[in-house]
Image (cartoon, rainbow, N blue to C red; front, top):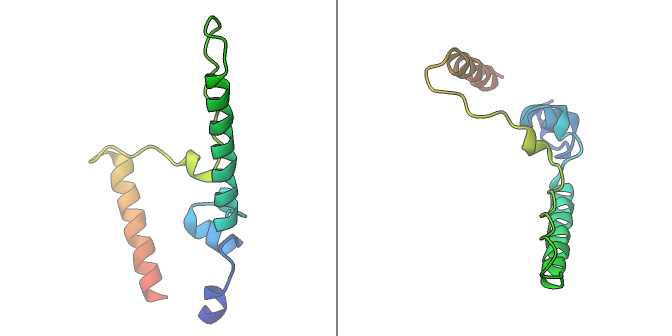
Amino acid sequence: MIELLTHLPSDSALAASRRGGPQYRGWDADRYALAALVNAQRANNHILMMVNRDPKKPKPKPPDSFPMPDDDKPKPLKPGSFAAIAASMIEAQRKKEQQSA
């Protein structure tokens, strides 16, 4: 069974759940590369507009980056807070279950 799981594609539902949730479904290396290309093109277009703009007019706003699932990651927890302690206990339990499987 484990042999079958190791050969699943990187954008599979299992890989998405291991990475953090369904928002990662479909995000493989190709999708990240395409998003990087879109961001680069947006940046190049912005630079072109900045170079050729009328100095008397206000500067154009920089472009927004392409939305990625990694953008929704939660903020780091404060050390010693209840949430940080609970998260560390959950993570320890997950590691223990993965080692026993």
